[in-house]
Image 1 (cartoon, helix red, strand yellow):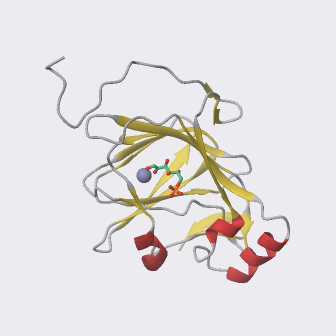
Image 2 (tube, helix red, strand yellow):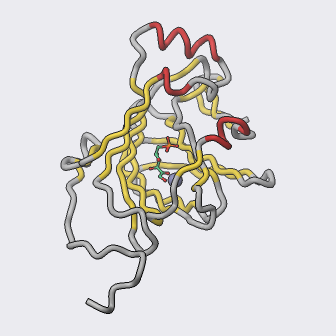
Length: 191
Ligand code: F6R
Ligand code: ZN
């Protein structure tokens, strides 16, 4: 088939199932789990995180995937399920990352829950967009992104991004985000 572009694999079309109540991909072939112990260095209150680790090391989030080739032209997609909870006064959040190929963006469609998408650039720009059922967040190229669950139920999103994007977690481990989402007076505050 000479119309197939070099560097982009030909695959058969397929479909995937999403359980909108549980917020999980029903026929995933890869699942990534992040527990409290995977989140060291990310929360402001390190002692509170260690208490959680000692107290059963609870799950923070899961990412369900049925991966496609990590190549230009393909679209990677997943279901991200971030549980509700606090580490000290800070709401449960994802590690956050830049895409390794910085010029790739991402779309998040929120299926369930309440929270924020925090975003930042290398040169210090910061943005926060609300996440709630039926809301879409566009993460442009160059913006690192981290989701935060400020609600009492799981924050579930369907994500789509360039399959060749890759994930750079190391820069966020050293840079962090300029702002955090904290519970203050019983409500979420970004500061
Ligand atoms: C993929 C993407 C999401 C996250 C997921 C977990 O590019 O942005 O699917 O991977 O929400 O967050 P991280 O990857 O930051 O641990
Ligand atoms: Zn991403």
